[in-house]
Length: 135
Image 1 (spheres, rainbow, N blue to C red):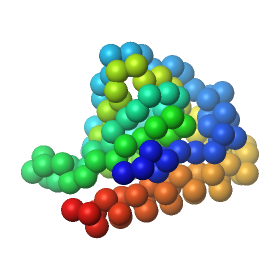
Image 2 (cartoon, rainbow, N blue to C red; image 1 turned 180 degrees about the horizontal axis):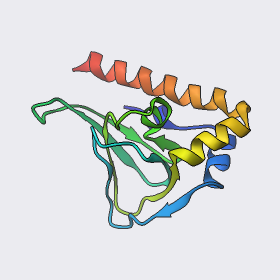
Image 3 (spheres, rainbow, N blue to C red; image 1 turned 90 degrees about the vertical axis):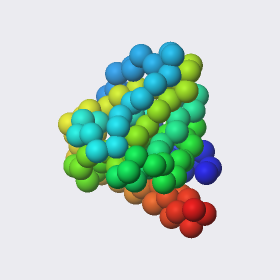
Image 4 (cartoon, rainbow, N blue to C red; image 1 turned 90 degrees about the horizontal axis):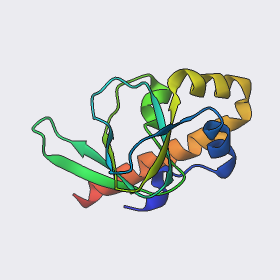
């Protein structure tokens, strides 16, 4: 699936980066697991990530790819729900983390960020639907 599914506009990414902390993931690895309590979102600054939705049996239902500028975990942050997918980054990826508290603080302080958030959510829903249609 396309890399831009999770990509946010530069204004939103920059605003979030100001409230973020770097994540050590030079060797790659898992950022969060499907079903895990959400504590924030991740900004993929460079590199690639894979987001996997698994069935209760553990079988992967589908996998979406994300590239630089992607916001990972956004639906969980907005919905205050557990992560709905597992996110894994490839070796060499640069990632930053924004707590749910800091995300909510930004959105309340600057409501002009809402359209950018909605665009990312809409693209993610569309990508998921297209991926399901292919299975």
